[in-house]
Image 1 (tube, rainbow, N blue to C red):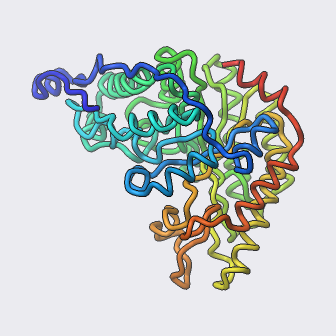
Image 2: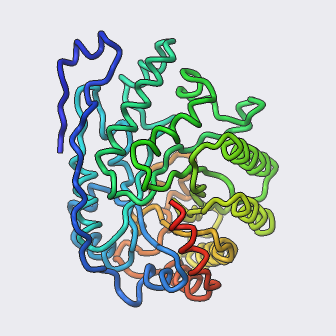
Length: 387
C-alpha cells in the first residue's frame, strides 16, 4: 500500500513530513501454524524458543519454493529491507508499505509472528532524511525521527512482536567517551537520540517489545572486548534513566577469521540477562572465508562453529529467538559484500539450505542445538509476557 500526503513543497517549506496520519493496517487473524514437526522452529519451540528468517522480497515474490521453505521451517519472520526507512519513505510525501504488507499477510496466514527491522540506523536513510539531519536544525531532525517512527509503528500496531528500534549504535573506535557510533542521528540530535527513539516507539505501540540490535559481539579480539564493554555500559545507562528497552539483539554474523569467545560471550549474555532484559539472536549466518574450498570440509567447519555458538547462546534462559539472515545460500548478503567475499571467489555457504533447497550440515547443527538445549520454557514465557 502506498500512502500519499499533502503538497510536498508546502511540507518541505515547513520542515515537517507529509506522511503523518498514515493509514493503519488492521491486524488480520492468525492462520493455523504452517511449520513442520521436523523443522527448525518446531525443534526450537519445544524449548520455548522461536526460529525464523529474514525475508528477501524479490526471492519471496518470485520463488514458491522459498515461500514453502519459510512456511515449513519458521515461526517468526522479519523483512530484510522492506521496513527500512529508505524502502518505505523514498521521498517525504510517500510511504510505500506494499512489500512489508505482503510479508505480513504471509506471516499471519501461516500463524507466524513478525519482527520489525529497523527504525533508526546510520545506513538505509533516504537522501531527503539525510538532508534533514544535516540541516543543523535539531528540532527538524527530531521531527524527522518522530514522524518516521510513529508512521511505521502505528501502522503495524498489534502485528509486530518486537521492533529493532536502534541498529548498530556503538563503535568505540570512533573515539567518543560514551562509545557511541558517530552517526547522522548523533550529529543532528546528540546522544539523546537513543533514549528518544525508544520512547517514541513505545508511545506508538506499547504492546510491542523494544530492542537494540548490535553487531560484532561474539568473537575474541581486543576491539570486540571494547564493544561488549561499551554495550553493557550503554545498557546500564538506558535502564538507569528509565528508557523503555525490553530486549537486546545480537546479530551473530559469525566469521571464521577470529576465534569464537565462548567464555566471554557467555558472561556477556549473563550480564545482560541479569539486567532483566531478554535477548534475541537476530541475523544469524556463518562467513566461511577461512575454510577450504572443499564443500564437505567447509560445511563441517560452518556447522561446528554454529553448534558451538548456539550451544553457548541457548544455555542462557533470556534468549528468546534465533533468526537467520535468510535460509538459502544463493541469497546470502556475504557474497555481495567486498569485505566478506571469499579470496577464491567461491560463493559462501552461510545458511542452512543449499542452492537446491537441501538441508545442509548447518541445518542439522541448528536442529540438534535446539533439540539439546536446556528447557527454559517457563523463564522465556515470563520474559515474553513482560512486554
